[in-house]
Length: 121
Image (cartoon, rainbow, N blue to C red):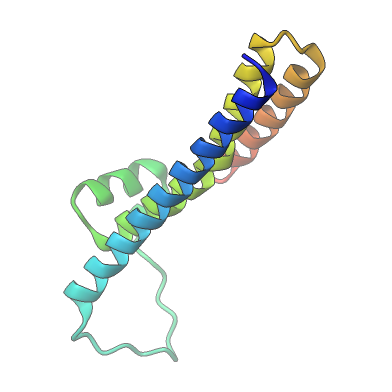
């Protein structure tokens, strides 16, 4: 594997990830509008979202039931996962190239991302 091929693969991964995330959020938004177009919205009172959407299993379960809020959340999680997948791909690419310094840097970045995402649960 060479640097140019790795860059092309990472570029494709980022495009696919962002496009997929946008499509899922868009589908969730359309579903929300179709199902909730007649509800009167009161903006002067804040109502927190469903408690089930505050954990990864709850979001996955909600999206599996085609709940519009769950689909939007899944799309946002896909958007967050895209740069994480980029770091993983770079880590694998640098390891295959036997570039120890960049492999170590990518591993450190991946650990920092994983710790920050686990703290968000």
